[in-house]
Image (cartoon, rainbow, N blue to C red; front, side, top):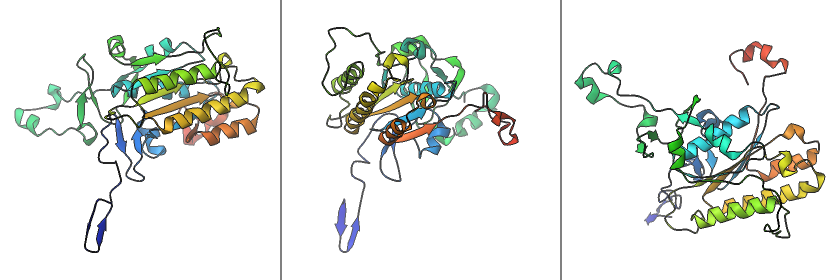
Length: 303
């Protein structure tokens, strides 16, 4: 309650006006702090973006084409907003994924062909989504708030990535220096320890004061054999890891995307438990292989 005069009482969402976190906005529906997935279309379907402090599960298509694109969008959006990135891949090296991040689309509003005279130049109004622009990169690239747009035909320049805070943690081989915590086994215990350390050491706990950014966590191909995902003995470890990660994110300025090949998992009870743990679940299906591509309703789409 913010004020009271006579019989009239006004209410204000606590904390919504005081948060000033880069690359986020407050939902008008429930006051959750949202950040973009990197895809404006996907943001629209899930209610404006991913809520900070949650896990998004992406069930891969059979050819792992579109989930890979969404992960790259998610990470590129973090680069655009100068967010902390944490990447752990069990499919291909994290360094290779970072090299494939799409370039940011920057609208060129200064072309002479679009401005006939100085009077028109003074009256030029950039589209509403580009009005709140901020300079992020030392290389001079300007980016814009929420839903930047990306060009998959080009990649981010290497010098931009070098100026970003990025931590990679691919599944390591077991060695004596990695200790078990008694609740989950290696390598899941090692991954959770690294995530916890990065969140705590960089001040992304909700108890931290003056936090002006968030941490983006991407775990692509979590079902890779490098994580021993197919082993029945590891199902409990995976469930426990996701529960602990969810609890950690609830008290952190962080958001996670986890992709896994659900079509590969035979145990449907296990798959159902994973879906119930995660806050947002997205299932993808490719048109490659099935006869859906011949459907006239989908003639303009490729997935």
